[in-house]
Length: 367
Ligand code: F6R
Image (cartoon, rainbow, N blue to C red; front, side):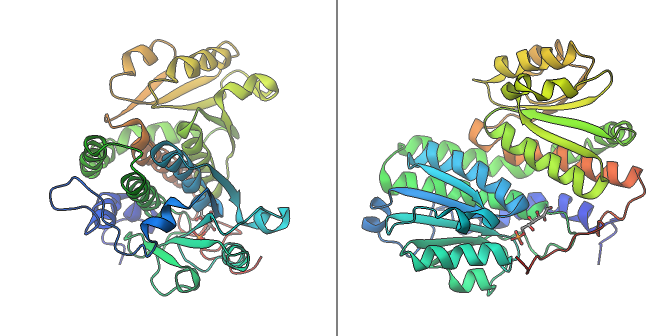
């Protein structure tokens, strides 16, 4: 059932192009100009009445929510807060009937996420669930459900579910933009077109897996590393760091690139690997100056950079891995893929059980 792959995780990484296509299928008009989310029962009036959005989830699903925040704020101009579900209920969040609470859960059974959903409903908010499992607890209890069409995810480390969640957020963001009129039709069509290109672009990244295997093998000899980025690149850095920790058992930290100098820079020493995610044209010069800070202290820097910026970035780093060009808001759907492969190959190099990492369960049904 691993279809020729050594591990479910690798199979699921390679299923991402299909997962992207399937998650978009039936949700874009035939002319490719508009998003149609028939599963959203909210009326135009209800959507216009949304004053704020809370995105609540755990782990990797939470990291998808961090990207979702940027998407919704940029596309729909509605303020979004993000919380990990285990914190949400206990901070007395200000949930009002004009709050839309979005819970994100691959399994739809995560106890903390389900409890957050119930808390939201008790306070009169409308709840939208983004989940991979039809008929799951989260799907049954939410008001609206967007099913990610990633197919079953077996490996404990989530990959295709995460990227499908990014696609779902992009679709929902576009849908809000259409209803609220926050973006013009030509722009929406441009984003949809760019989304249609993502599957092939992921294939192009997968075709370079060997390069990432080599990177991972050298990383596997270290006990510490850093991931840095700004904006959505920071969100992706957090996901890359989690993925690496959970299956390779190598300690890593994800840092907002500009925040390093406020303390963490003290940990940078000769030879430490730093993986920088740089996909946002308007931010890359800032991230480059942070890269210079770590380089000056002996760090070995790999930049995950998007096409067009690689020559500029290459001057300041040790290695670059180039991802195909896409719109800034969609970049996470590509930039995370090399990080998934690095985590996979680092785990493999260390001889770990890739699909069943120690101490972890696929579905966390205790709080
Ligand atoms: C990490 C991972 C976990 C889950 C988290 C939430 O690779 O898989 O962090 O993302 O336990 O699970 P779901 O999405 O099922 O609620």
